[in-house]
Image: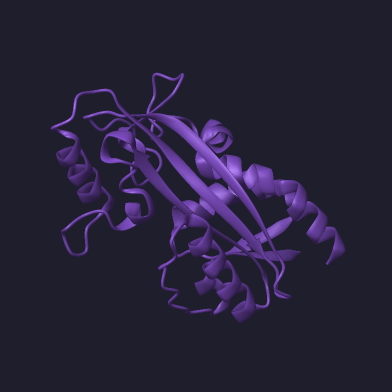
Length: 200
């Protein structure tokens, strides 16, 4: 079975990728699963630079086809923040996902609702020979002031999806994988992955 490396230590991301790509007949692994330990500084000016940097570093280190994404939540009232800094959006050292949600709602409290927002994902597929492919996905909605749902991670419990009465954390996994920002980017990458795997 072919192996694809997910350039992340986040098991939530791995589950999402597995759900979307399960029928490709590939083994999806995290860096720790294949003994790769890297510290890639995400200091790019945009999502693409960060995703490309991670994908290339992990692909060259492991010799495996690697998928890396950089994702963020962009809130209109905050001029696109937290954006690139979504995973570190808190003044509190060692902040949890829950801490970041609380901090975001504190920043939004002075603005009138609705707090329109969207999740963005840039996904890069990198090959060990240096070639790479890029895909993007977006999911629109709004931030709500109370948490709802037990699924998902990050900002999912306070993100109400456009056209739904549910937050991202209330939507069943199969549906989320069709409509989420990461799901859309991975689905766009599927044909390329199928082609690459056949050539391997």
